[in-house]
Length: 250
Image (cartoon, rainbow, N blue to C red):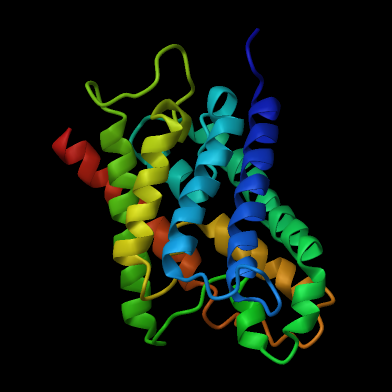
């Protein structure tokens, strides 16, 4: 039976929700007071995010292709691998999923957020990214280059000879195999995540940032909207450059 666009969007929504529940949950576990995982460190965060993406791919891969990111969707469309008519519905589903995943992570760690009320930056960091050194030009370049490398690697993984999956799987992370994608995300975090926290995905950052703004979190600060455009437009520009590079080389 053919899967409709609506059904594909539902899988994108659910996959992105699980991705952000686990991803924001990892940040909360490592950073919030009285968590048993507090202080576990950057390696745990990068490995955890890799497996969070893998979990989303397991859910959505066979049905929607598991883009799970507006940047990936844009990159595939520009590379001629995804219909433009499906871009906006996918992006809407991904953004809703990002918001819902962050809300669920907050509900799971609500007592620990309350125990960290005197650390508003830590609370914000459990939802969205913040730069280690605030320098907008360099921060934008970091997100752009990191996402360019990520999307180019995903496109390269999907070429003949690298394709991990067999059968009629929709184009996306799911067509590459969940574990190779997880490895790529881990490598990106370890190598290129130290400057900005490697958003790489507008749905990963903007959806949870909106959740932070709306949720009744004790002791929270503003949601840093002056920075919020960087983890949205940096990845989108990077994905566009990756698509151009892919078309030039392949």
